[in-house]
Image 1 (cartoon, rainbow, N blue to C red):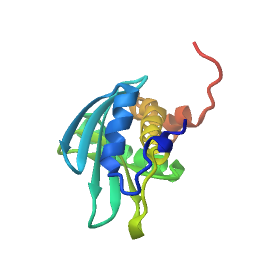
Image 2 (image 1 turned 180 degrees about the vertical axis):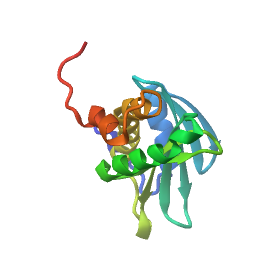
Image 3 (image 1 turned 135 degrees about the vertical axis):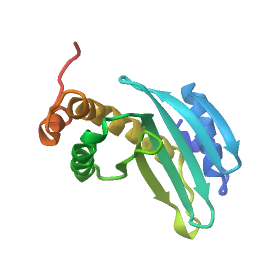
Image 4 (image 1 turned 120 degrees about the horizontal axis):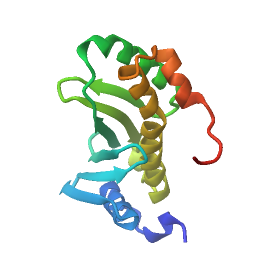
Length: 166
């Protein structure tokens, strides 16, 4: 059965769908309010914090996937260069760094203007894409910040195709 078949009502709240998906995936989550949910999703490199919030006024489901990071201040210019390169490769969503909170974020807004309704498949794909992008670029960030690699060289680890498993 398709994920969307579980939601047959026309007006299902997007955060209700997210809560159901989090429960199905056995992710830790906290329904912060009617329009917001926070959860933790385990990746290969680390656990990512995801927050999804619905804005009825903007008709947008916003998602932020974040992880803590504390690069040395002298590395910030190279980090921002790397983020620009990473964002050039992302079709949907983008990265940003919040130095005051020491957080790397991947953000995306699913616009549902005109009364559109998000499907469970769309939201599941949105969450999986966020975690996948963080997983893909995490090694490049580490190589640049802590390994001393220039941004473009560090990014090669995210571009390289991996075959098999070690």
